Length: 245
Image (cartoon, rainbow, N blue to C red; front, side):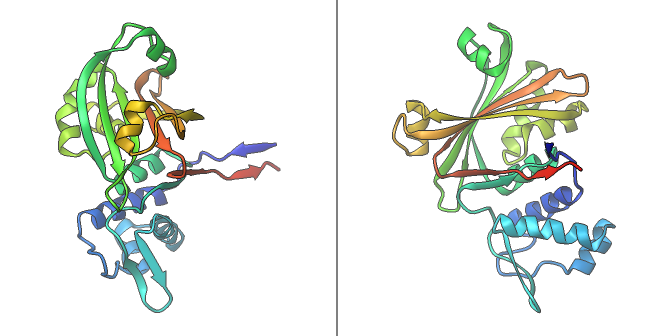
């Protein structure tokens, strides 16, 4: 039997913190990162965890590692296009931290029947919708995302505007103490809607990927839903299947 491993691994938290420091230029491009020994001491963790965290930064092309030279910062943000290996909720946080987001709009909406079926919510219900794009190193947008949040959490609007790169579900957890324990994810091929295609600088109805994510708490209550459109060739989703013995 093949299973998809979903174990939360602490190295993702370490890599998230390091990615934020790089983005904030605490570790400028061209500079050396702290040594593995220093990071082990700071985070009170093993060499294996530190190396896994640095490897994740390397896969995002934020750093390079050279024997005898240490770990060198190569870029403030991840290069154009995603190459994501999702094994935990922490990986989503890491993805948000390493890919700049531009908030386009934030407003309360009432979802119609068609959209409600896509989101898996009730028709005619109210949601706070955050619309945004994420950008590659060349400045071009590489994904359009709408995040629909339960309006009882409308207090995060100002926080999202002030810290647009952070995952919205993470902000809800911090402000309201509502722990997100699972994210259901569906990935399908799609034709790029004309309005989204124009913003992402591709042809209308050209091939793309549509990703739906439903964020739920420990009681399986829906806290937020996101829909994302990725033009073909700008997103790669990787998983590892392990044979169960």
